[in-house]
Amino acid sequence: MAAARRPLIAGNWKMNGLVSEGRALTAELMALLNRGARPFEMLVCPPATLVSTISTAARGSVLLIGGQDCHADAKGAFTGDLSAEMLKDAGASAVIVGHSERRTLHGETDQTVRGKAMAAKRAGLTAVICIGETLEQRDAGKTLAVLEAQVLGSVPEASRAANVVVAYEPVWAIGTGRTPSPDDVAAAHTHIRKTLAQRMDNADATRILYGGSVKPENAATLLGLEDVDGALVGGASLKAADFWAIATAIG
Image (tube, rainbow, N blue to C red; front, side, top):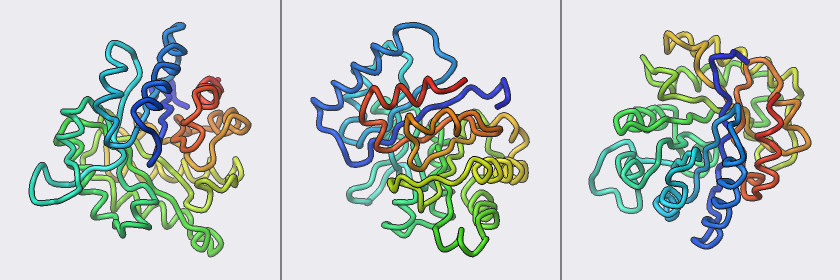
């Protein structure tokens, strides 16, 4: 990991958490962060119903708050959607776009994801752009080709490290307990960074996270790999002790 790239540990709470639960988890994380300076940044992305609540609870701390998705437009007749500007107004500083569950369950394409990433930039949010191959693509030996196509299709041209983070999440590893080998993760991240150079002039400064069944038991191995600049954590981010153990596994 390059010294200039400060690790980012991001938690995706997905569709989990009521107000009382969100406040309690936030309080636990803030207490841990307040113990002293850490070599990483910590971001939590609660459901949209909790963004304002958690942002208020975390005010004055170093805990960052993000959304889980946004619409490409700033406003309009899009029932049920939220704009990047709305998330910003609620206290978010980042937003996840292109998560595999959005791509798979909602049919989002690379073009859709790119539009959302552009909206994040427009609103002053950091876009955490997710990419990753399916099991079928992996078994067919297409992993690197798929990642390259997704990077080129999803990351807007002239993006900057200041407003873009890429998260590599093998679709087949999300929530399954399975992870690719360290060599496979390293190869994927190296290829992603190489491809990013076609989209931005500071690819070496851009953080690339690994996601997909990240847990305390494998965090040190994954986070110690070259070109892995942190993690996008799902289920384990709902337990403060587990999320903290992953964060502090950074060497």
